[in-house]
Image (tube, rainbow, N blue to C red; front, side, top):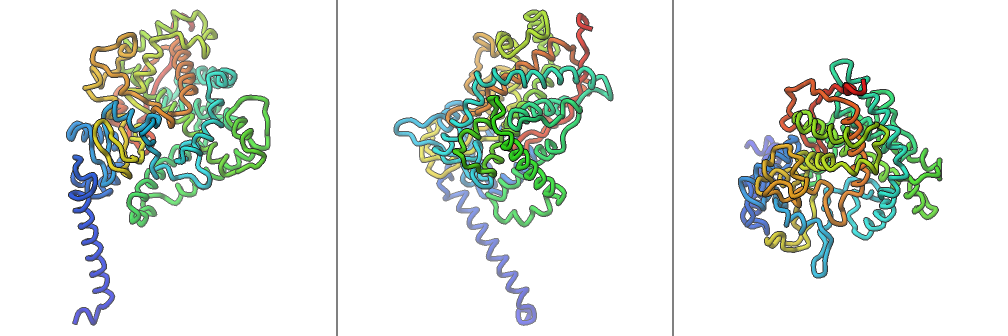
Length: 493
């Protein structure tokens, strides 16, 4: 009777019941019969990608993976078809160069986010990646960056002056935002031939704000690939104003790209000059725009995140900051003596940088790779499984580090601390897909920290802030305000 009166209602109930049954059967298969069923992990993670979605969108993913590895061991099933490993050997097995008899681990579809020809980060085809890397490698070489040092130093010196002025006003300077001013201005000039004007204005450019906020969309896009049905919820998770800003960002990137292309040869060895040389007379605007976008983000935000984190750790460890300041002020009698070459002669500065990268790796997600069917640290993993190591977990594992949660730069000097395994910290990754911008990041880090340490005494104003407890990860870190005051050191005032 009911079915004749409400035929559509009955059909809907049957359809929903059928879908639920299919989903439950799939969960049971994933837990007990999937090729990865023998690997340990939370039952919900093994059953469905909804577990991953829940935690990945919470911003707490790296903390969860660290805790789960402590509970389940070195091999952890974090999804129906995905494993996380937690050993230096596994890191080498997954990310290093392919060898005879061992096929490469290619990037997973996590990286399928570019429109048109993929950029240097998104490209999955190893042949295409090799072509792009050759095109850009020279621009990031030590020799090329030495030629661009005048540009870097110009923005940095202005930035150092601004820190003294702006941090004395309005309760100090929010150092994480300020470092973004610096790194975005530098990369903007190296990529487009003009900065964003952030250092000069002491404000964050609209475009930079949009770039930073867009990473939550990448997080959601990753979830959509894993759970197609989640697309129904996206309109409720992403404000229309945000989508509008993303479109503005894409438009601005294309406009900046066209403007730089129109400038042609600027007589300098910047990033775009190498891309333009290799276009073979036929310009692909979308490809150039994709490359510009990833260069802007990868060449700025990660370095700014590191600088903000290491500044926080130094301020929380006054004796360590004092050692750094003593080294810099002893080595250099004048501020102008600090340059890209001389800054490499400071072992304690180098140790501070390495320790900051260990404690707060800017890229703290596991970088997913498709397993070709191989042994990873002695465990056979079938072809098609997604595998990774998590930097945040590896760099805080007490098996590889003495005092793993403490900021101890001395571990990177000489023999370091007993029990440390430095191979467990690879913030720029390893192998053919290692970060292309390592030289630029190191130059910016050395010069920025050395100059600030030489000229200023530092003070943390909001002493209650806890960087780790208050940070969230949505592809890249979202960090709490860290307010700092820089005062010209007594001998210079």
